[in-house]
Length: 562
Image: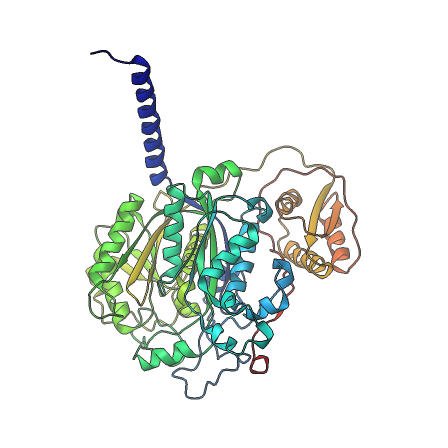
């Protein structure tokens, strides 16, 4: 028998290539995924991650009365209010290329995803224009479609009714607006939607299905249907709209609204591109309650299996996680079952307690945005080294034997304990349909120092806006921010602004120091033109600056529009 040496060599080379591919795939499956950008809207006027952190760190409460501008009939409602985005009707359609009719027909949830996606990219130091044609994915939880109920007489919005309210269109519009060519997935797993979206985005990045991804969710209630249906189904709604998570006085959940998006990327890619690594997603898992205690009732053993699966994916033990941002809806049955599952997992075999909290006590249950909100909160908590307290806890619920494990409810804020390793936190979100999600986060390594060397004699700050009004507003916002943060390096501000999109209306202010630059900003904010500069771009660090100043107007279908 003769052997064809050439064919044998070719087969050997093919086997080696396949072996290399499998090694890369295995390495990718274990590589941490970095969160490089965040943006959000939450009740209480929260318009970004820094404001969210200030809100929870200060122990503030966003629960209030029903919106007055949605035409709701609130007499006889089963509760006094909730947590609302009172400016949900505001939008800047021209910035995103939408007509007035499209803006009016588009669900406010679509508009919030557009705005927060732009802001998340800006915070990541990514010019959205550069993403056109890239394999960037979009994964977003969109569970409400009641704005479409207002479109049954569509005279002012003819031709836009389906595209205005479909969840699939919400993510498709993001992909179209930015020219993204990765997966675009809208999902509805009820209250776990945004955390499931993050899980799917992480899996897609690890499998190289996309190079970058947006992940999160949004909830805006255009009608009172959710309140009415919850009451009819016997679901426990808090009488005053507050979530008293894990408290003895818990009397049900308070419904709320919100939006949040993360930009996630493989860690090696984030470092190579110079994107800020805010935190790592070490592991995640999803699961189902199955045929448990009832269709909408939580199931403890399923939650325990979920937590163990996420820890296994992260390659960690429960004792290596410091804190848990719980689902914590403040229903007596739900909190009791969740606490027992946490005690049986995170409460075992550890020298120090696992800290337990829930931002639902601040904002209410923001539903499809709840999971991503918890992620943003815990990333900020890891960065600041502080575990915020959970509000409205008169005493930990006596329905739970807290001595069964080392889990401590955060009735007061606590400094993050020093364990001699990176800080870690877990986030849970459970859907009323039984779909469960759990994510394990890890503190990022400190950023590398900025390039050394003497700063240039003159520094230029480049600003732009879609309209002259937006340009002036952008200058005003930056002026206020710099005045409040006097330790900002002018070079870092210049570098951060240079990573943003250059829009049609532009201004450049230049100077040899902060005072001169701020005077230039004030002139632009007052409407005085500032010339362009030949000053070279500078090296620096990406720092947090105000995001784009959208020029919002009210777009909401009222009775007279039908």
